[in-house]
Image 1 (cartoon, rainbow, N blue to C red):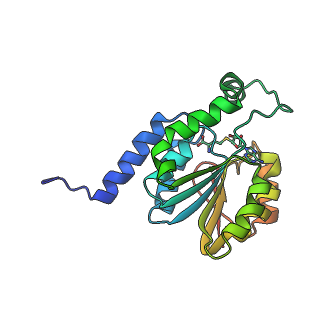
Image 2 (cartoon, rainbow, N blue to C red):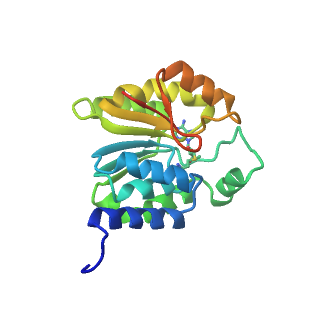
Amino acid sequence: MPGSNKSSGDEKIDYALRQALKTPGTITEETMFWLVEKAKGMSLVVEVGAWRGRTTMVLASLVKKILAVDTWEPNPKKLRRDSLSDAMRKVGGDELFTEYCLRFSKEIREGRVVPLRINSKRAAGMLFVHMFWKKADMVFIDAERTELAVDIRAFGPLVREGGIICGLGYCERWPEVMRDVEGHAPGFQRGPSSIWWKEV
Ligand SMILES: C[S@@+](CC[C@H](N)C(=O)[O-])C[C@H]1O[C@@H](n2cnc3c(N)ncnc32)[C@H](O)[C@@H]1O
């Protein structure tokens, strides 16, 4: 636009953030800004734990392709009383998946968002073969905290050299996350909020 100081890259980022804020989700604005800075210009990102798509929305206009892994099912073993679990139960697994697919129907049609409705460990096994020749620039983990060690071990080999593996939940509230990150991602760094990340 004449007279505007914003580059088309900045406008893309503003758009991505505005859209993400309109999408229900758990990641904070701080996390979104961090993700934008890390992900812009990336080609292939694997997102583990997509839920209703807030993270996907941040990434969708910045990254060429997102492989979004989630079971999109409520966890029957864990009927917690918190707003996230209540929302999960209210919408139900299938409705949740449908909602996600509708939200990203254009990107899915174009092959830029690929929802993989399977457990993370199985997804990593499948993707290891699929991605043997083209690894991810980033794997972002925001799934079951008690399975983080398994996820780090399973998805680490899918990241290209110089790429990053990262996730949320590194804070005193979740000592199991701190323990698993320290044990399985030595040399990790901390970002804002509860972000942990490691260059591979
Ligand atoms: C905190 S939510 C993700 C929030 C999302 N990143 C956002 O932007 O709002 C965690 C998600 O991880 C998924 N999940 C948890 N454990 C999983 C596993 N082992 N495999 C696949 N998905 C899993 C859940 O179904 C849930 O949708």
